[in-house]
Image (tube, rainbow, N blue to C red; front, side, top):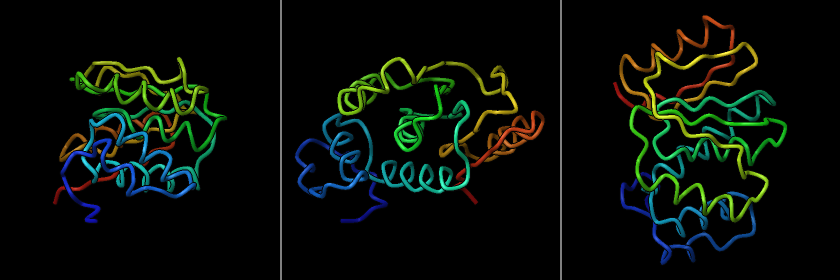
Length: 162
């Protein structure tokens, strides 16, 4: 199975993730939602894992969030974060479907992930926040880093463009 595939995961692919580990449980939930490409699952998982090794607690601010998978995984990995704000200038219509499937599997996430449709520039960041972004491209990455640094917040971005 090619991890970088842009093919959407569907309920039929759940059997590819048959283990009992946390990643496989999340992957099966993503498959049930049928909303995301495989590569986004792997990117969000790797990023959340690496960020949580270093940073605990704090409000999660997932900028350029797409469907908000990274925000959800950050809360799954560390329950000491009370909320996650998933921000994008345009939230995909099926983001709620993904969120509902994840909340069904992890009921403790209910009412803890807040989607906000807004430009990054309008988001208020606090010093205790963890600012993450797996989908920011080009100058948006720089803007996110600058906003986080301005408030002395913890920040991690995944930049995939040149």
